[in-house]
Amino acid sequence: MNEVIHRLQREAERIAARHRAPDFYIRFRAPMAMARRLYFSHGEVIALREYVTPLLQESLGHGLFHSSRVGLDAATIICVEMEAARIDRVRIERLMVLGLMAGLLHDISRGEDNHAEAGAVEAEKVLARFPVTDEEIRSVARAIRNHEAFTVPIRSRRPAFQLLSDSLYDGDKFRWGRDTFTHTLWHMMSHQGLTPRELIEKFPWGMSGVVRIVDTFRSTTGKHFGPEIIENGVAIGREIYQYLLQNY
Image (spheres, rainbow, N blue to C red):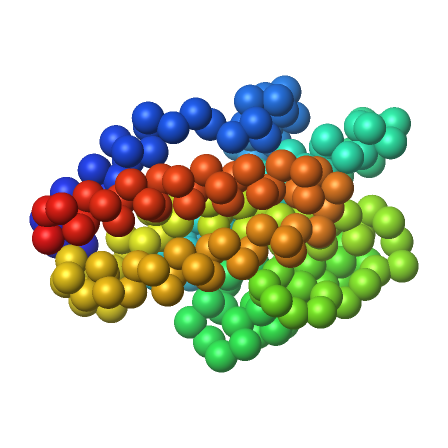
């Protein structure tokens, strides 16, 4: 990433810092703390993170930073919805662990055609090395198959595994908010070798794609809080676009 892109990313971060965090990240601090605790202390999650880190393609903005945030938000959604249903803590934590693992694995084949299907197949191979049941492996793989936008997802007959799938999708699409404009955009600009002028030309088209995601959230929590996350990102994106127009 060259100095021009670094400078633009820092400016984007300054712009984003002026915007209030979406309600999801304010209201659910306790479930988020629980997700972070599992992410940094659970043995299976730690081992999987160490395994996949070298395999994730940071050049596309979908490396460990992205995958970790997807998993953390997926695990948070799982916690919120299962606590509301009064599920016992042991079952909640186990599904949260699977959400974290699915997040870490969902872009493992990002550079391949039909990366969701390729990633699901690869995830099954990886998880076979871990103390995970066959049913859990299949549920994680199904969630990864289902994480692409604007596709028809494969349903699960078990509500918990359906929640896992929906939460992974929503955690991934939450990234289409401010993360798009503070992180992913600049990695993709670097990877594609775009100049600021070329980025300006592509910006309106990219913004229109972000807006389309608003109506696709799948979990109850995602449907309620996801649109604000996207609107927050769009507001940041508009300011970045104006900055680019004024300076480049």
